[in-house]
Length: 375
Image 1 (cartoon, rainbow, N blue to C red):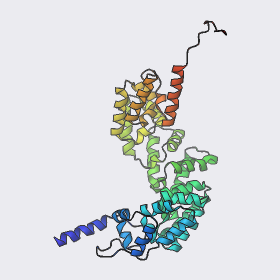
Image 2: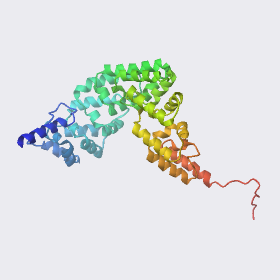
Image 3: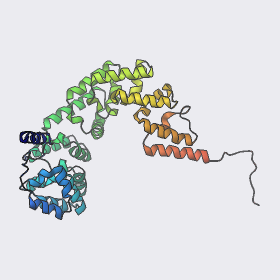
Image 4: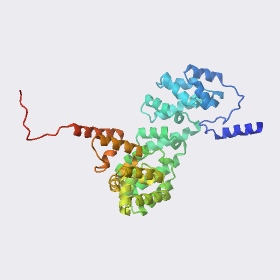
């Protein structure tokens, strides 16, 4: 029994997430908590029970720099409540050496416009800021590389915060993917003057595009070209797919295009035109598309209407049904009208409903009716 318990504990340690710092991956159950850390966290109003439950191993580490982390954040303008939230969500931050934290602060300030914004980023992505010192050189090299491309600082900051893996790895890997994207853009007829804007848009829409193998991009573009898409259409797809073209593969796209064509009963050319207007047909699963097709058809919408406005397939069945009922209350029948009114964000839809309500309540003007004079 003791051997079984010991074995299960070891397995539990092996399944624990990789630590961002060079620390012991597991501590023994008998090791005592670092009381200085516990007391410092109490003083900062950190939820100790939450830390014990989710990251209890941190409280057993020595040395810890709880006060130093708090002072660094406070010096950047963080309030007490913000500091408490950061340490509650990411208590591992107290294990960062003060010199390492200061180096990170200087590094991030090279792309952040001010310390207030940096504090906001740390609050949302603490693990991206309090990272291993072994990644510092790669971070610095990657920042320098992206700055050499004259990319907007906000894009670089967003990448560092949301996709820190892109900055912790050697700069050569990012250079290779960026060069592949630039080459594809040129080969597809993209204008050199617009390349920077195009790259920024692509990176901001899919922050993990750099982590994909360049070969995947080439294979997918070749597949789509073989399916009859022109170079101009491929550039449109690459731009509209928000980087999904690097997450797909020829087999999955072949399957989804065959499914969509059979479901819609359209020709190859009609399918290409539909995909260009709704690239989601390439990356949604068969289960998702099947459900959405059935939902639209069961609401009395024809397949011809769907093909005319295929972006309606990007909405869940629940949202579509809700919007159909809202429109019906204003006298709009989607079975005979355009589906375009169903599209857009929640704000766009509410604006459309508002216009329909005004149109419904506005009295009709009768040009032959006598005008009412003053009594």
